[in-house]
Amino acid sequence: MYYLNEVEQKYLTLNLRPHIRENPVPEELRGWNWHYPPLKPYYDIKLPMYLICSRYCETSRDVYLSKVERIEGKENYFIRAGKITHYAVSSAINEAKKLNFRERLNSKESYGGEFELAKLAWEYTMTSCRANYLKHRAEQEYASEEDVILTSIPFLVEHRMDGSLLGCSGLISVDCFDYLHNIIFDLKVSNPRDLRLYTTGYALILESLYEIPVDLGCTVFVREKNGKIIVSRDLHFIDANLRSLWIEERDRKSGLVYDERDPGKARNCNPYCIFRNYCL
Ligand code: SF4
Picture 1 (tube, protein in one colour):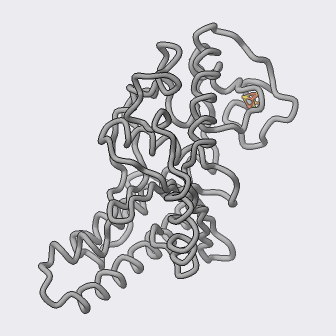
Picture 2: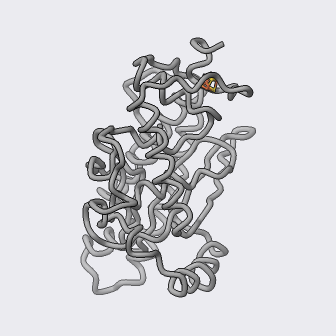
């Protein structure tokens, strides 16, 4: 799931990395400067990452309903499919790191059609981890087993981080951090679209905690079509514009919570919004 294909590798080395070297991120937009403006949170309000980054409600009423009215949305197919697919991918990687390539996806929770996508995601992830592990093992004659595993499956999955320095609530769980190539991955069960704010938020938090620069993000989109898994990736530079936009969204939405202001209903509600039962 998190291995780049040949074209993406070329784009990364010949285009993206040189571009990043020529256009470095301004120092004030690095996460480790969380205690200075503009990164310093304007309000003493903590918001979960999904509320800062999701922009499906054009008035941001979802933020108001969730944090001021304390209303819980109604789970839909995409939420359930997202949960079980994230579980499938992260547990496949963790099992692969233990060289348990024969394990099967188990789930204690009962799921419907969304379980099919999770099974496909599990097989896809497990197969690519195994292929990569075997390739590295064949090529690294003198490496220890641990060395081969750590370099062939270089993924820290579902890593828990404290986002409070940047005004985020609770423990933030990042889908995957490729520590060899320094790329943040975010997994989405949807068609490809612009969702780069999530990787931006995760990169800022990593920078605030570990004080290392994280310039690259990749949103991975998975879906099922005719019994097959379809995967596409949006590999991108977490540049100054994205960082500024993330800060703007955080401050705008936390201001809305601070003022307890209902921004009103959207004119065009998202058909998959979890608050539809409440608003409409
Ligand atoms: S139902 Fe419409 S107005 Fe309400 S939160 Fe969702 S998108 Fe916004």
